[in-house]
Image 1: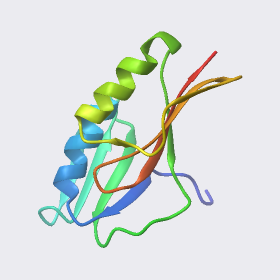
Image 2: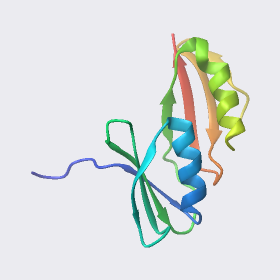
Image 3: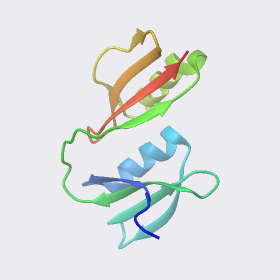
Image 4: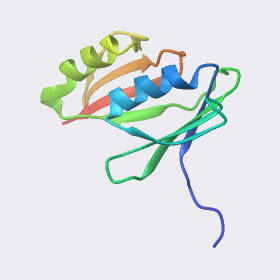
Length: 117
């Protein structure tokens, strides 16, 4: 079989807090929980595992998630994510390929939201 991609795992001191954020941000739901709050897995509506949250120290890295939305939804989605606890790392901007906002989740993990034209 070889190596296959499973899911993105985020280390966090508070798995429940980030699970709440990512569930709401991406309309996911919890499908697995081990040892209380040590390990939580979030899946999409079809049950496909998307994000794992593992209790541990937060470490900054150069890896980030890219999210996408329709151009007409961009400003609304950026605002919605801020209401959920995300922060803008820089002002949202328009580029030749579309709109982009560099953001971070409540633990400071970076992600981008893009609306391609």
